[in-house]
Length: 163
Image 1 (tube, helix red, strand yellow):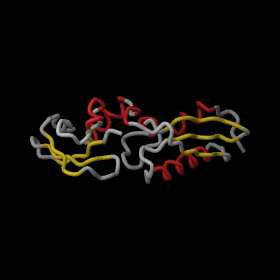
Image 2 (cartoon, helix red, strand yellow; image 1 turned 90 degrees about the vertical axis):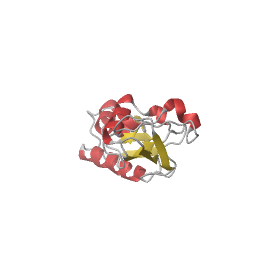
Image 3 (cartoon, helix red, strand yellow; image 1 turned 120 degrees about the vertical axis):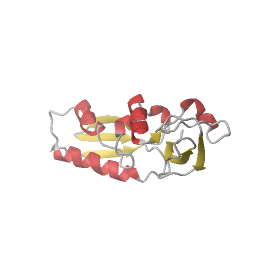
Image 4 (tube, one colour; image 1 turned 180 degrees about the horizontal axis):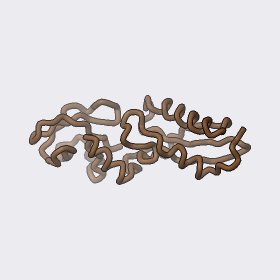
């Protein structure tokens, strides 16, 4: 039975703090993938946008949404994936970028997105803020990240790729 005292904003707020399974210091709201919540015919529909088409975290996020809402007495839940418009790192909140950096992941350089992986690309080290970094691999610990090395502090770190 649907809990009638929960409106769509209440439902949005309940699920907004779900952490990203691959980067637990940021939420699905921080990432900008939580797009909408609507109520039609006693069914709550939650719309989310994957960061990448085959993002393996989406099933876990969907399960967490359903688990949280079910615990609040909502049993009619539809989680909808939408690919249009495509997710972009421009949807990352400033708070999310700060959390990524503190966690040791270089946040995306929006001004450099069109030049990703070009010779001019500068990725700041999230540990020492050095600009003397180099690409090790276009693929980091997940598909949405690249692997870099800082030539100053010698640390290896992920860079959240512009998308």
